[in-house]
Length: 508
Image (cartoon, rainbow, N blue to C red; front, side, top):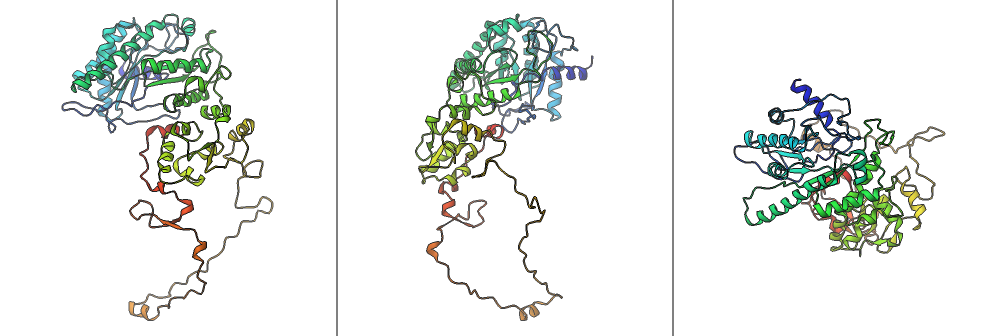
């Protein structure tokens, strides 16, 4: 089998692993090496479903001795099989990098003969890349559960990120669908990596030249929908993993039916919407100071698929609202649907300058189609409907962006009447006649039209709104003046630098 056929088989087999983020490492250029993990050296590409595809994502081998019923590479499945050698894969990675196809490597593998044999082949590959080819780019390596601790330690000294996939959220699910995998074999390398990272960070505080150990941290992956666990069970596990092992990310992968095993659910399609809601809730867990039992509880063990998790929490705790944006602290603002981390910080900064009005909120990045029902500005509520959970829910899940006040639903305006088909008549402007012939400067001066004097009365300056003139040095102002009622002084402050995550998820 030639190298092209191997690449086709093993890259296709790797597509079900979603934990391939390439962020978190910052290894700069070194003399005599190629590649870099600095921000300018990693090219982030994203597929339609949000998965990172900037790396060469490939399996070392899809020849597996395990028979996990949810896995396409299980030993009992009839699929084409292939395996690289360490020399082949290292040479392939370097050639792809030199052609600017990739900026790093995401490497995993099926369990070919046993955990130790497979992990040894992976370590030989990354060792060859680092030491022989002097490759200094990003490498994410999957640790094989059950492998020897010395192999795990050597791998961690060579790569940027490691991950150990838990796969299923419960021991019962592992026993039923993956009987050859044990929870202890999965958690042991995770604990070893966490301890080594902590020790390395302490050593680097004392000795600056100490080599880094897994500088981008570790992650894991959970398959959603293959077993009957509730979202509450999944989030309790995720919260424990973040606290105990200090994971950078927990990835959630919607189960894709790849076999007709009777132990697996007969799903018509992967539960992608549930996966999306889990990622939103995970964001609340990591950045919004929520706890797992606040997002899902005994009465609501699963996330609401019609609403984002923060809005769902708000509707269950209407006594917490409305929040006065001119007095609420940072943690309280983060609880408001439509207010994210950046917009909450902008609100706090703007309050130091002056009071915030409703008109200012949208300009600070607040998603007003949700936030307006849960806030007040200077004591005034702009939600249009009362604090009733059923009414708010109906309004928030409306298919249109918002109903027109006094109407049952929104209506798209058109330039033509529905009955008559007559177009709206725009006011016409008298045409300006151009001179029939070109004139010399002295002729143009002789025929110059005198200026027209204004005959309108002087306006009442007291009745006009005060003006705030934007400083000419500010970009985009063009020297215009704007009514003070529409401008908050804090809007002239420098805007915070945008971050990558807001592009993917926005403010929740």
